[in-house]
Image (cartoon, rainbow, N blue to C red; front, side):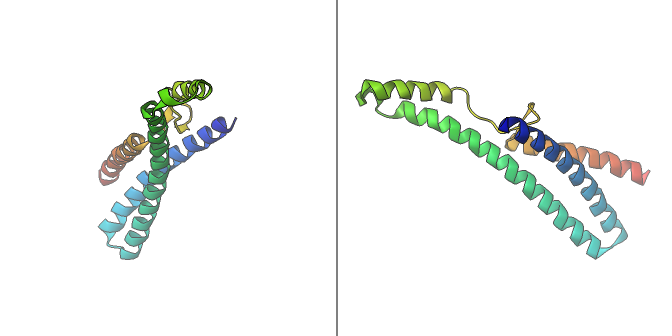
Length: 137
């Protein structure tokens, strides 16, 4: 239930961020070409904020994934053979659970991590270059 809610919210957030980064980038280019310093600074701040927010989501997702992988490795590396049998069974369950790591997902099809962050930036810049060509033509 919680995963479904967060997943749909993050999907909307990623789509909105991609769109806003693209349009803010276009506004930044137009403000530079016109020579409007105030609008250039405002747009630069908005772009930085959007990229920072997207980076924060992506970093948290990447960090969560790395920590889940580290749990399985750490438990496997401990001296589990010296622990009583009842605790060893629990350790086996933890290792089995760590084989299927937790991901922060957006829309059930995007895993939110640093690769996704770079992909969103590349997509936004691709759309921005198309818009720039359309406006200058």
